[in-house]
Image (cartoon, rainbow, N blue to C red):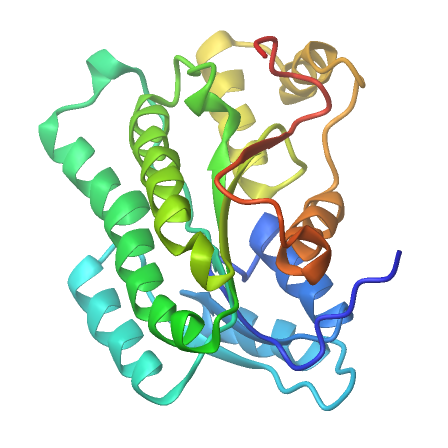
Length: 261
């Protein structure tokens, strides 16, 4: 099976590193024109320059700060005044780690703006063209924690659960316009965020970082951490016509980590 996304325009959030970058690279490899979004302009320039170009694809980037919703809202509104998107990948950096008792109400508000408001607002803007064109893909980068909450990620557990239930509701409303809406439940992947979280665990537990990572790998039935490139493969499939009958789903990509059905 070959996947071609030639002629499609994709917008990928959080794409200066980690999973977002891997998604952008695979979409470009499949022929899509990709616009990257993140905070670091230098990094965005570098990645955009290195993206493969097939079939006349043109790549671009947009400098945004997802942690400042008012600023983000203005920038993304201006972007959609002059651009149309066929494939929207909703992805931002995660909120700060910590347990439920460690967080106050302002932390939850910030996480809501970061993970929920930005996703819903961007999707609403993208849907106008998708509905007119009778074709579209909305793919949300979520987490396995919506099924099995992680004690040290209370903010992510809470707000990402809201995102996937909203996505299910939306999927039912736009399916007749041949728009699919799916969420990917992310397991452990070899990214900068995992490295940062492991460092914090290492300090809290008083053990080497290597031991923290090894324990993480042992939790996964496949006994390894995922490669972000593997994540990109799944996104490309969901973005293609091959996945036109898949919508409203929450798809784990976790090496078998989730124990529930």
